[in-house]
Image 1 (cartoon, protein in one colour):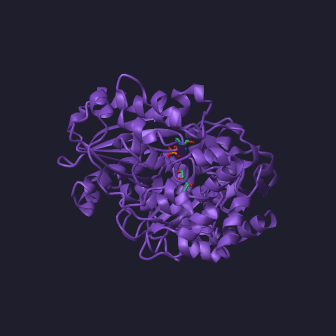
Image 2 (cartoon, rainbow, N blue to C red):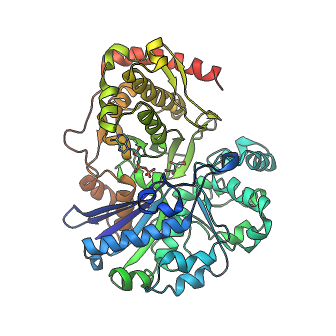
Image 3 (cartoon, rainbow, N blue to C red):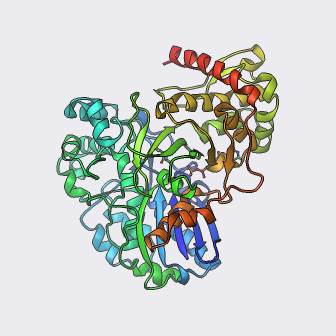
Length: 517
Ligand code: ADP
Ligand code: XUL
């Protein structure tokens, strides 16, 4: 069996696969907000940060790991697990002192992870992908390299606020003494991977490309980007490696406490989006994946690295080799939740409203669907912008608002993915909101492409389990054939009659957007 773990924004999920029977042996999830109220992070991060700061407490992720594995060991026999791999929300970073590795080497199973590792943190909380506080640092890194085009050509993205390099620079500038005490910087993914391995392990190419530090053509840290970011940074990062790089046996903490076999090993962890590319069976070009989690993302495998001239799209490593493109939208599920709550609906009513009047009101009313700062396009929105009938603008007809919110989200996605130049022939939908038929139908109509959903809803954790199997020598396409199938009856077809409606609405949406930037 192979275990995949996904430490995402709002939850930690495990998917255990049995490669012989081709079955999912167990799936479990721990929701941070619901399980750990003491961290005051109802949606997985600490609300109310100043100047665009969004942080999470890494001890919460460790508590979740202990809780999830204790539940998993009660539900199933973990001694059958041969290899563990995983993924994490991208870009978030954890700062550790010189005692981290020694603490990992002598973890006591009688105690918990959080209390034993907390003394090693040089920064109490971790900036995560929602953080938009590093505008100044992005400008400084860009200037040091001689412009955005150079940063993008080397790292696959222009300097981006949430990316780890600018975040590290901000930490170095605001607390140089704590930065100096830091001897290891990890991503969320490599932090959890290190805890499991019982020693610091490398960042993988998939997640490493989300730092503005990895040179994509050399697949190593870029010395000029390191120097432009913070002093001695190269000494605080291990050389990056492929996700399938196998480590020695996992830490005895996990074998003794949760019943893993002594010879159970681990691979590296990657980003949630690269892992999802694997779990959605989309590692070769052909399928576009739209993930509707806390963030909405649009991604696809790409034959060679192609960068976005407008600077919104990114190139990350594809765990199956080569590259993937990705665009991230910050106002994803939390924006849908905000409107759902404002209208006093639950998800099934939201779903019904989305489908109501599909044909009659499609594309008529426009909403810029941003309840807070957005990253694609980059702008400090505070509330949505409405343009349409008075019944729409006043909110007297909830169906119109639900419809316009979803149309706004996916028109914005269509607009900002045009640079990829891929004809969207088939969309695979994943993430918490993918099960909502109303949302899925709007996606199909706006992109004029069939939408499929897979059996396993957590595609990142499934992808991680598949990476573990590949690291053990299994064949990825054969595994994907078995595990990444569209769920029967899950496919939705676009309405061809809406093609012209949305082509026209796209132009009006773009005009409204430009007028508000
Ligand atoms: P992440 O991986 O970023 O932690 P998930 O992919 O687990 O997030 O998605 C969580 C989100 O899914 C929640 O914020 C919630 O708004 C959304 N969600 C859950 N169920 C539904 C539903 N039936 N319809 C729409 N959205 C939903
Ligand atoms: C991708 C991004 C988010 C996070 C959280 O660039 O910032 O999708 O990975 O899921």
